[in-house]
Length: 426
Image (spheres, rainbow, N blue to C red):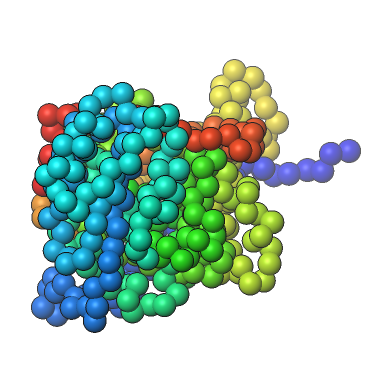
């Protein structure tokens, strides 16, 4: 005889509600602690640090079909207020005028070197080749459509100079594309969600990933772990985990600003978030065995957070399927889902989301003027982005499980937003 259950759905619904609520407050508390520990200054904005030395830095710019953006990207890089740097740009088999544009820029800027790939090799291989071509110990890697703040290099190098075990530093991406609802919501997302998560993760010791669009590395640390893997969908997540499993520290520098383009269509956003979700799943699966070692214990919270978030997505799928079935057929009482309309739990989560953004205004308002204009749009964040992230997590896990190891990850040109508004926010 089957055991009797009052309800199997009730604990699932509780999990669906309390997990995001718990994580939201964990991130808020962690971010506030980080802010008052490392960022808060009585005088307001922190002054650019005076370094004890200025080691040579190589700024790496991998490009694939970036003709519309590469001139602005290189100009911003060349405006760095740092005395000792060079730039290596990689033209990875672009089919537009990116290669010719980079060659023309090399004539204009003596600090710039250009590497041309005749066949699409992928971002990870471009970063590898640039690292090997560079004579310098420190690398700053940005995307071919990003615009680096003039003082970003100085802020990043402060960490390497003061921390012998710092293997990487992740910067603070800020959104340029904000002409559509999706663009406006992402402005708040990168402040209220992504920036907050990185601060909180730094408090408990390890970060899930550096920001691939703006990150810096100590080359000796990269050499120890084997540089970037060319078969991972997200090379930034993979190298972050390998560095930390090898006991290198990764720091977050909110003053290292970098203005970036993001998707403003559902199709582009779906492809981007699916790649992020698949990359996280691939990384977790590949290094799961290494996680069981006691010396890897500081990575356990990162792994746990990822696994529980995937479980949450599949729990939501099961509840949604049972609710749909229950609309047409009678189910046992313990499998009946009363409603999928959020009700008061949805209101609580929505208010929590707005509270997150209010706290982020306090923290991130110093880095970007007019951030409060996006406050209204954040009420839509749970509807659009939670659903997209939920669905991509569900799709990504089987894709990661079925992917054949060793398959080269090559460039696919992403959605760069609405071109005529690409400079919004600068």
